[in-house]
Image (tube, rainbow, N blue to C red; front, side, top):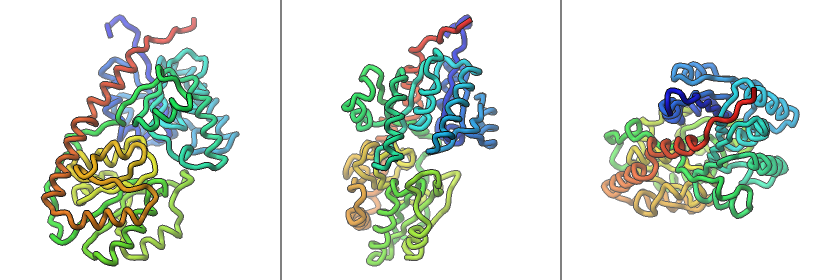
Length: 384
């Protein structure tokens, strides 16, 4: 971009500012380096706002944008608020991140002259369930996608699903493997001095049924009875705004069974990953699970499912194992199999995990592909 060229304004829209700062900060830096003015619109978060401002990104708090909001009046107010933000910021490019942000941003931005590059980070609740709420979410998303200039998918299953149903034409699609992983930040660490006979399986993620937490807990309880040397750990926070948030009664019963250790919600997951032998995510559907990329970068083998977004991280038997989603018995069998794998074999599988991460998911490579997509759009015409 020459010094005489107008500086393009990129406005990202997300339902969590903290997630953008934590997981997309290299993208923000890359956008700055490419000459963009960067703005983030998201619900208020003072800590994330200060961090974003220090990183050179502007921040526009959205008072009416509620995560997984299903109140039509509330959603209408969020649409009007977004429309006002767009008119005030005059973005050249709008980049909504996730299903809810895509739906609201595309509808609010229709006709304002900005290009819309959608980051579809996964097709979760609305596509896993058949409730009236999920049906409405799917309908609104289908309408909103008509206003997208490009839809960026994280895995081929989601892309194929949309193409097969003609929700979006192939010419408007791109496939980029998630948000990438920083191989320096998530680097291998020396193994901790765990007892030689202990094998540690760790789940890291929001406490949701759709993440396979029920299956993890049930399989752990089953295996622990026969193999007391197996350690099962969980780290993550509940997500009450999500309809599949684990119920308190189930959570209480699982913990009282005595097979699980709860590490809480962690700002830095690296020490927990480093202390683990296997990272487990029995999820029903993902974009590309970030926790699995982080574990791969730290040379850990994986246990996950062949669901969309998950199977892209595993070469069966080489860096981990795939087990059917929703099947606690099958997951228990994989746990037992892993208990009998020799430490050196497990370490070799972990090294292969890092190789896959470096070859396919390295952060700067992923961001360069996204920047190339953004740079194809020239600044929007400005009305006098």
